[in-house]
Image (tube, rainbow, N blue to C red; front, side):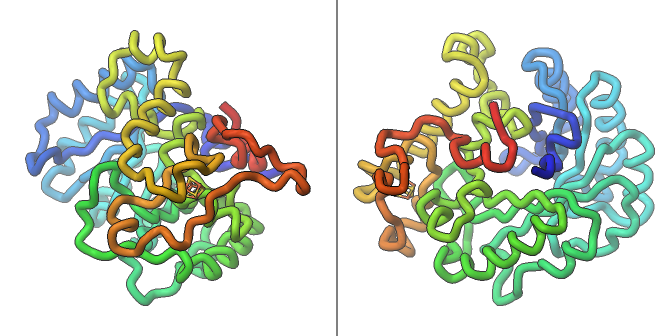
Length: 307
Ligand code: SF4
């Protein structure tokens, strides 16, 4: 089994810092305080910094240096900044990049580049398989829906049935070339139908995956509450279940994966419906468990993810 990129990177437990919150650009002291909180209070090891622009470049440069100094490994997430800023950020300690697959000018980066594709932003374009195949293998996150809150997306969600065949081929090609492909927030019954359940990684899977984002830290949950709930994995699973409970629907209600599946967003259920979903009960003739599944990594173990 090939180790996942995130495991190869040897850095666990990350979170992200957005320089813009509620329409306001945060100042440097606020961003540094957030970094200190992640490292010194929560003990996290890595952070994705979001929102760099040419105007905020100097602030980010100091923030990156600060993160490195306190032992919080910084990645930059989003569009790459212009010109030689890429090199300047790498010089002060950026570990890697996480950019949209539409990003141009990638040869400016010397550090590894991870990618994401928001399917609703893809329009009629094909998945960027060839472009990724020609690059050093890292991570490709395919994002079906990226908000925990009720939708702020202006566009309609992408219908699962319309992209899954193409995704199966994309995953086949890219995994064979060494890529880690994460299908973010894809319902497990749809993923299983296409043999992609090990790639399905939503908020429930992140909870159990030691290399993923710690949403309890993002949401400033007190550490003693996390410990009392049973540690990070238990606390985050509980958080994911609570936050996504509005996605309950009659089909998911008695499904054996209802405790570990993100389910379609409320926007999806409202605009597209739930007819594609199949309530799962397990097939005993195939040796499948019929019981309620509570381990969010039940399928991810097939590719080496374990809490
Ligand atoms: S029926 Fe619902 S809970 Fe079950 S796998 Fe599908 S989306 Fe998830």
